[in-house]
Length: 440
Ligand code: AMP
Ligand code: GLY
Image: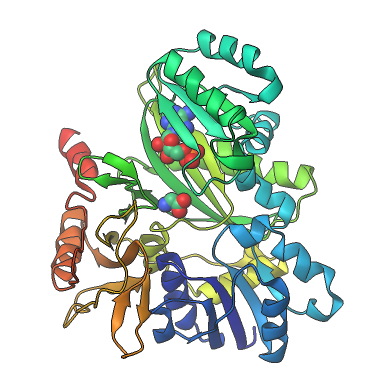
């Protein structure tokens, strides 16, 4: 393997965590992050390019001798950036980490993902998909299910396209709004209606070259704004890794029932997939033997955010080497060494988030760095050179320690050294898992 220049696309905490890990590699010469944020420039050079500007990204990569392009968010993948790079002869020496447009459909269309799972006998909730002309059949299907009712806009809806309703008449009203009144725009031209799964959620992560794969550490994220998992959904308020209930037996079920058939299914459909697969799982108690069984809630074709902020710090192996193996189709020869310690990540957000929120507040973080890692998300440098808030999720801290309570304790100590006007964070990250451990 040779030393190379790398371009990472994205601007969130996920990308800061990836940039941190990529920049540690001896194989990384110059790291560029486009567009990056107020923290990624500690790991490399921020480049003012939009992730949707494929031609601009290609020009930059050529003129800066970039050999590896790592795509953080889903939008450019669903938009076909991997296909764009594969289609231009002058870009053929640049390896892209991220699936083709076909592969990105696993995230870009819920209907596609469900059909894929059915075809490959991957455990998931029973479902049917309906379009505007099929409202009556959709109502009948809803009547055949039990409460609560799960409605999913087929397309990308910025994480807002899933509705869970207790009352069948509310479900029918919402379904009508999705199909006939474009509640989520084009994304809800088709709606997946599925059975409600009762259990506890977690996320599994895979890096694949399309044939071989490695399973990265699993994680659990905390999606709601309020403590005790209440209030509006957010991009994610914190994460922990590992997840106590995801023991070897459970993860072996994930591997054999989900990961292997997913990769076989991609090959069967002749889909080029070199990149990350993020599998959102529900662990459901088996009625017969009481063990936990994994069901797929959703696929994403990228890493999670803020799961990345607790997953990447636990990867001891050289990430650039692993990505090169993925690009060359030799992941079976890649090694993955995982830190046995627990990582806890706490996200700090701006006042008002996830609704309209304030920007431009000056961040103070004297001595906060001691004890862990700080990953920026929505931060920027002001004209005066101050670090200021520039997004809803502003920054997070990750701490590693021998147990979850110790990791959380360290993380919250760091959180308390960071401040800005209106800063908010949940105080209960990981508490549900601690209660589960006590109950055992
Ligand atoms: P998704 O965008 O598909 O991840 O769905 C958003 C959230 O809705 C998930 O994180 C789950 O909490 C919940 N959810 C989705 N599908 C189901 C289901 N079939 N049963 C129970 N909860 C679900
Ligand atoms: N944390 C969930 C996601 O990245 O989609």
